[in-house]
Image 1 (cartoon, one colour):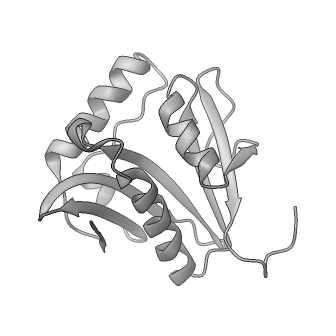
Image 2 (cartoon, rainbow, N blue to C red; image 1 turned 180 degrees about the horizontal axis):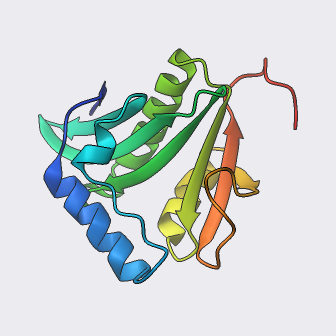
Image 3 (cartoon, rainbow, N blue to C red; image 1 turned 90 degrees about the vertical axis):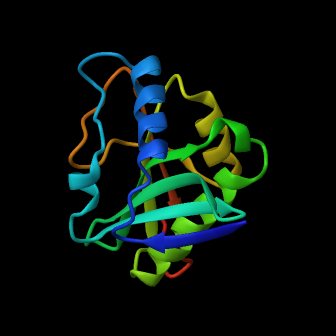
Amino acid sequence: MDVTCNRWLTVSSLLQQSDAVAALLYPGEYRRPINAASLAKTDTYVLIARIAEKAVGMCVLFDRGDCSAELKRMIVDAESRGAGVGMALLKGAEAQAIKLGAFTMLLEVGTRNTEAQQLYRRGGYQPWDPFPPYARTPISLFMTRRLSTAFPDT
């Protein structure tokens, strides 16, 4: 499996799957779609996991400019789940965040997305307070992980 980081590559089928999962779990006002325009912004990185050159997973990494990065919209194709794709993407995103100078990774995950929560906990993520621009909602769980021992405990 290969995990690559590419700022401009759009994998529309994976984005559509991500939107469909989000719509199923969280219909209504709290859902925030991600589209090609939002991925083309400065300091936005798209990581693609491939098996035999087929895109099987993706996530988006935002460099927040404050020594932290935000992980968003991780999705693994249904046929590829259970093959380590999610953890490979998570570790790839962390490696990219460190290259960008981030000491901390932040993320928001839906309270109903228990599979993702389990992955993040296995990766060492802990519950955390909402971070800007987010506010506490009944459907969101915020998590964080320190990426470098050079960052002081908080």
